[in-house]
Image (cartoon, rainbow, N blue to C red; front, side, top):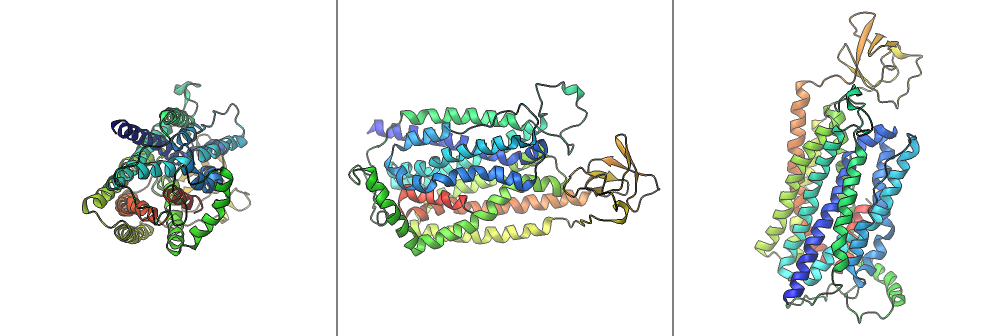
Length: 473
């Protein structure tokens, strides 16, 4: 009826909004990893743990939710999960251990957002006409890709603002956001993303648990081979649910098509997530770009290409009415193959670096190899620190440096890395072009991958298992 149809579209709109909030916060975190490193003076590996804490929280409950989620009130679970996105509070002291609060904030956020993707997609698959399901899933995935544009742009904006904005006189700040020691207002984006998440959770508390099925009933024979469909007569108590869980999981792993697809997705997610997480930092250090500029480039160049192809992939499936299993599998395989071939070419866009720590001119200085405090010598070489350059005095400019190829014995060095040459700008352009084409190609298999996987297993379990693969990569 009109009421149920209207309710479904309200759910779809709310799901698009909550996807926006979910990916906004996730992309923002990836855009500020260098700011967090500088603020708390921690290593990249430790920042990786902070970023991974979201996945750890997701991993803790994703298997149980994948099985029991379809039996519960899915809209309310999504609402509760979105509103549990916790923003780390602003620190009141400058202790290095304060980064732990960011990690502890990401854990409950990962737990809460576990329900959004699997239960939301399953709800669409249950109550939307079958021929429209790929289009609706494509819309959801498109929003999930579009919102990182704003996430990275928000990161770009916050990176230009001083970390102590509102608390200090900005006129007294002697450095700019292009300086390698600049720390942006990383905490500000967290506050914005947290408020958006709370607003996105509200509509789900007022939606129905069930809607009448569409007129064209979906054949659930294949889907229910390994798990029962979502209906009230399936199980009488939650004790029976728990008894059915382990046998169902065993049947999952016993399906060869599912098992090999499971393994391939784990292998596929591993490099992609790592590349997305550290791509801003890579561009900063390899091509000499500021944190603000790298976030702006990723937000305006890479992500729109992914969005366009994600949406066009769903339209392609709908227009040509491809066989859901065979057609989706072909599109997914071809796009993945050519996408990874393009990614391999990125290895040709880097610059060789000669990392020689112990040299004659800094012997006996006991320099730290973990300290990143770059200076630019008058010989045009960037040194990791003044100590490694053999500099002895400083008053804003470093003097009495003993690095080789200096013009005099009292050679000097300037604070910050040396400017990159024209060849670096050209190589950055090559890197961006190849990266955009690769992202466009790989994104083609987004919607077909979901469709293929859903035809192997049960709906809500399948989409959550898909999410599960991305957590254990």
